[in-house]
Image (cartoon, rainbow, N blue to C red; front, side, top):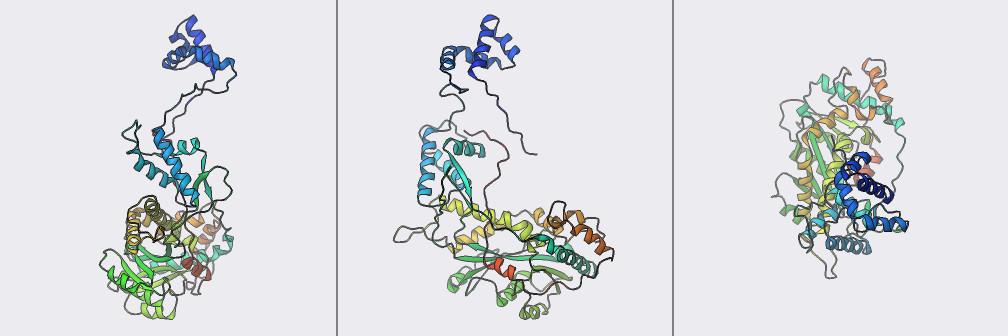
Length: 461
């Protein structure tokens, strides 16, 4: 449970003068008890009596004396960070909340007026810094999503199909595999930046490689096992060959940086493998290279795999990577990119002084870090939330995320009950038609916002 932020009371000058008068007439302890304030406050206010009277007579609406309140961690740091933010925005560069915190921690060791050796640039400090300097986060608008209700029937059929295959073939959790391709841009500029409140134009500067990408194939099993990430770069065959020594990842290349039939076969051979003691279920979307004839032929070569193809338009509701994995995975990538952008390490520059895109080896390192950080229990939970490991008797259908109350496809829960009771038409085979939407999603990704949610106020100033 998140800690409850402390609440502070504010007292105006009139109230403080009333407390002082009561204390002078009776006693400070009596005044503290009568007005329900800390005795320490009473003693402070009595020392400030003349200044409080002056400001009250002038009609000041403030509740603090000039210079009162919590002191900043460092005036010098405040000025330096503000100038850093403004200089970044003047150059149309993105500034995230995390970037400000990282920069503050770097600069704090260099300031001459620091007053706290344990300064951590907490979320609380960040929020106060933004308020003091009139900064706020600006967000880009998003495109409206298609009505989900039309997909409910497809989702129910997919769940019943998957359940039937798993039950009849007696497939174990360790043999249920979910996979997805996701594009990662060399410039991972987020959708928000810190800027002056009220600014009308919010341009964001990049290294100039916002159209350059790599494809990352993520796959995991229902028991929480994470398979090696499969990374596809555009061209650069020699460089890709030189990176084969990097452990824990398979690195490949294609003419356009996207997956194709040949790379899908390579992924099956090098990541999934043919050796297994029992039947397996592979769950993926209807991207063209997943349902092509070449891939179907490859799957016949000793993999013992049945495929469950997620119907077109349904991946955001029922595909484990889309529903659960991708957000924390992309958040970690953004964090690595922002830290890189805010610092000077691992950077190279053009003759004109512009920052070059992150090196391919660095991008691979970020991918490995992000995948390693993804919680194993979260992976296991994702299979249940997507209806793959729920009990076939329907007792766990309430775990299926897209059918929960309040979700667009909530009607699917009742339909699933009917389907399990045999009151609905047979689920048939999983849909095998190529999904144009998946082609778009796999080949044009929109990055998630990575700014942290403020849970509780912290103690840095």
